[in-house]
Length: 530
Image 1 (cartoon, one colour):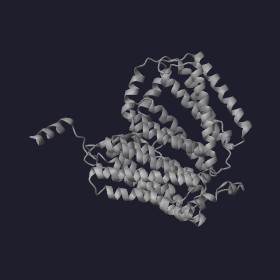
Image 2 (cartoon, helix red, strand yellow; image 1 turned 135 degrees about the horizontal axis):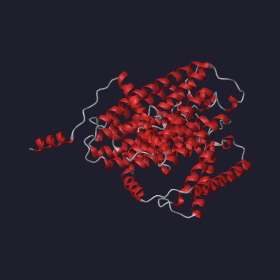
Image 3 (tube, rainbow, N blue to C red; image 1 turned 90 degrees about the vertical axis):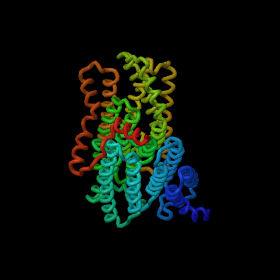
């Protein structure tokens, strides 16, 4: 198949090229033609991405061809990005009808995903960083789609500054890695920390440790982890398709960065500790704050911060296949959730109107014992079949047990009515799906040979127990004083964003647009109509 080897670099370059040309062409066309162009380019990008993944799965794509990476991680991410692009463009063509800046929007969306395609395929440090920078600049323009909204302007200003900080961290890390390896190819640098190299037990140098910590810090900032999370919550002022683009296709790039350099991260104890502490605590706090929010889009934004934190924790534990599965599921779900947020409002109102009934202590105990027995039996079965290090971690099984406990205990409420047999069947299906999908993605990624640290596993298990306790207090223990205090702090977001915003504007002031009062707007509209 020599013709495929010759054609593959051009196919890889075709995806971002299609989107870039579509962005340039759409910006110069009338609205209807601009939308048709965008739908054609995103559909073409999706088709080529699917073809590339099929060729890669068949082993017909040469590795590192023409400066592009063709490993399963890159091809899966490319297909995901182009799928989100196609869905967002199709939805936006109807959603934005009547908006005066449609042409600008459709051009910027294509530009964003063209840069995303370059970032996930690039095998050069400089090209990766340039693509990352281009994504951020294009997203900044999308977030300012309504420039007269003060909250949108504030969120875009904070994101702009935090993105530059993340890029500075990544740039410094890349320079350190280039000086250490005397090579700018990402595949060569990552290959130096592969399983075969790591088995020698050679300790990282100070330069490599610093690079790993800087990459971890860049990923934490890009994934909007606490306390630098406020911009992610406030950008819901932008149109819904912008939120779907951000939450479904862009914010995951921080996780992709750590997945890409996971062989280096997993050999650096300081970098792992940084991610486990910051992302772990941030994930728990964000999940608790989410429970106090009424707005669907705001709840989804807090959920993204929590999910990104959990994904980074999975990478730091060495569960890279689980992190990739989490990334794909989160991207598709969050894009769907934002695009369907109108229907979600009605469904949430119906759910809230339904009377709830707190389970008794006996129901909680029974659910906990059943869940523990179910998961423990499966763990024994899995460990009897395979000795994969990734399946030896305790914390994912703890989280699964706690989730099933909540599912089984609350089955008697009006909101989640159902029989025990049906819920046990659903629980067994969830457990089997977890093991099956985890094994599937483990076969797609190269083995890291990393053994999960007992202390890290214990820390993450403790965080999951803390999250379960917080959930119980906020859902079923509101009559306790501790729960009321916790609810007050959660409602305020633990005052973290106020502190960050105040200091950010003090260090880098930014003039925000004045808020338009409805009465003034009505008067101006009447005057213009006369």
